[in-house]
Image 1 (tube, protein in one colour):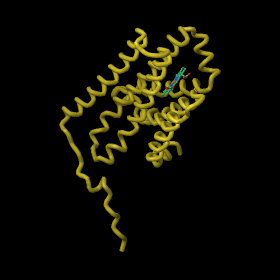
Image 2 (cartoon, helix red, strand yellow):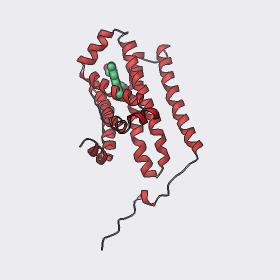
Image 3 (cartoon, helix red, strand yellow):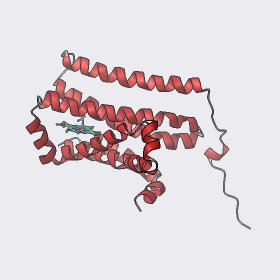
Image 4 (cartoon, protein in one colour):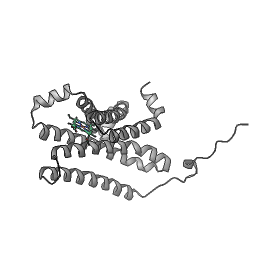
Length: 213
Ligand code: HEM
């Protein structure tokens, strides 16, 4: 006789369902927080309200912001499974869209303020500095995902849509690698980001193995 599997926390828990209005309010809250924080960061940097170098401040804020949003978006699926709260998945796309917007704001800070629109210099930095090349590849992936995040694009692309969006795992790994590579001392923060990302990818190992088989 086969032994019955012990019940896990997720099996014992009752599924959570909330009114659609709460989900809408939650998404609106994410939209507001992400937009206001990004706007404030640029406003404070441009008006000299930050201590230290405003360009470095913007690069830090937008770079860390993009990484936080990518990681939060990857966290939604394990959180929804563990809490038996399937509706939570509606915020995954919102978080992903803001991750791409923050990464674009990061590139903008670099191009407009750090390199003063010297396009030749921008290109040579991207090509010649490996940590920037890696960041650029991550950004291109996020940008393609942003452009194809609409329902119409999903319908048009069919099975290719999922293939494109699976590259989020590559983008988050490259984002962490770019962060690790950009520091010359104090590896703690980028190592913590890389550690959290590797744990989240490990949780999805079966899905990832299937994708890249
Ligand atoms: C998804 C894409 C990207 C992510 C997630 C990302 C993330 C980050 C993070 C977390 C940092 C460190 C901030 C800190 O020190 O607190 C950083 C620094 C930086 N990133 Fe990115 N980045 C991305 C793409 C890019 C791109 C496309 C460029 C330029 C073409 C770029 C240029 C830089 C530069 C110049 C720094 C500053 C390094 C320094 O402190 O000297 N990044 N990025």
